[in-house]
Image 1 (spheres, rainbow, N blue to C red):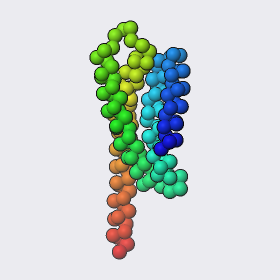
Image 2 (image 1 turned 90 degrees about the horizontal axis):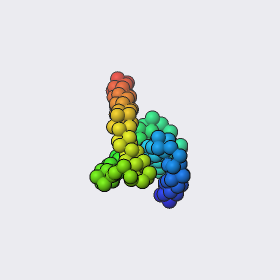
Image 3 (image 1 turned 180 degrees about the vertical axis):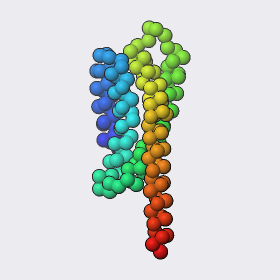
Image 4 (image 1 turned 30 degrees about the horizontal axis):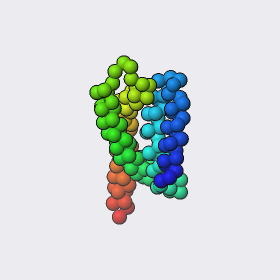
Length: 138
């Protein structure tokens, strides 16, 4: 768990340096990190490298989806609060945070979530085919 916080603090410190360079690059990096850090955390805690199967990959992605959903709801609520007090003279951090949170929700809902649903459907089909083969062998 400490490694997760160290990685998060390190990535945030890098983002603070980068955020003054370009809004678009920073927004993209924030979105990628917020999507990848829960997956990496679940891969390490599930010891996926020792038991690398399709079923374990699906399980890890499903568990990471819970963390990503919590992150998404949290940053969306914070950005809604910030956007109520947002003006043209707001600081760079507020602008990047609001842009990143809205993009994170869009990427999560329209790209990441359908992929997870598709992977779970493929896993379900594989399980059903395997069960039918076992019944036919008996």
